[in-house]
Image 1 (tube, helix red, strand yellow):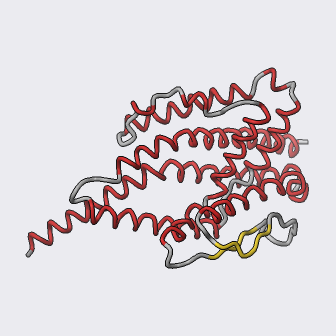
Image 2 (cartoon, helix red, strand yellow):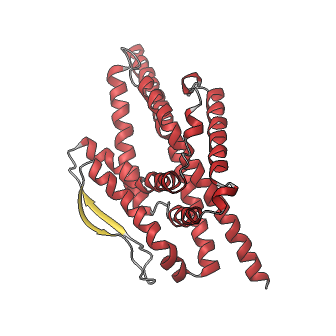
Length: 284
């Protein structure tokens, strides 16, 4: 009896370990980049408030960024079958910290809809960078992920430290190539380049997650993790069926990491410029 319990406990530890690895492979990079983007966007917004004032920032940039933010929630509400009850794309009331909101409901008995809360919560983190990517593509004719397409992902091991380092270096190289493709002498003389900068700043400064966003995302993430754990619990004794597909999917997601890193670098540049303007303003 004691040996059986030890074997069962060992099996649970194995299942828990492989589940955490699979979740990390699939969502770890996105969650890490999302955290960096959210913190940086909050910092950029704070600097912008100090440089041009809150009301001017909201009037000039906030309306667009907040609209894209809320659309990020709405898109995934539709994809996961949630019922949208109320939408406010932009609120200019300075007495309220609520810039916009999406109220939605879902079927508690639906596994997919409960998991959908995760993607609905992080929707702005996904749609924001995609908006920047599409803006560069259609305004400037620049495909930011084209350099990444030349990388042989099948030769990169995603489940080893060396493989992760190689992936990070590849992502940075592809991002740098994308930046060079955008910030060149020809584009600096093109009015569309400055429209791109405007949209990038407006959208990038709103790529944040509010406490309700995080709460909703966490509930969906918990359900997703439990679902993967249960799948592994009932199948891992036969074989590891999930890790392979997770690795394959993560390779396809890697091109999206380039877009997220690109958005982070642009936000860093915006933060640097705003900081210099703030120092200059305070030094006068």
